[in-house]
Image 1 (spheres, rainbow, N blue to C red):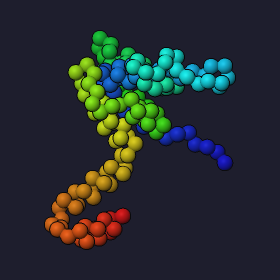
Image 2 (image 1 turned 120 degrees about the vertical axis):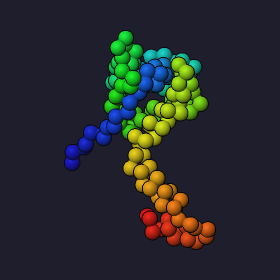
Image 3 (image 1 turned 30 degrees about the vertical axis):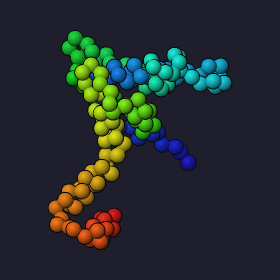
Length: 148
């Protein structure tokens, strides 16, 4: 049996989002053969979560691409589901960074990447329900059962 590599997705980060995430992560290190996996700097106010070096490098490229003199408005970053969950941990919805609502924007991007298919189904269902003139709970429950 062969294992498949994790499915990856692309998210697009603005300069503020890339810098915020880069500031929130520290590099995950393996000190002395897995005796203690930790970050390069202590977790706390300056770093929220330790991330693997390859993710740090991809985020670093997004920082470079969005902060150069002729930089991009958004840079593409390839991530897998586990990395999306890591990003979710640092994306506090109330955080503003460089005058941008990065926490809120990142939450939406992360959840859209993680839940895209389910979201589209739920949105379609919600639109169908909104179009129905339904007052009874029984009719709504029947519609939900039929949709599933």
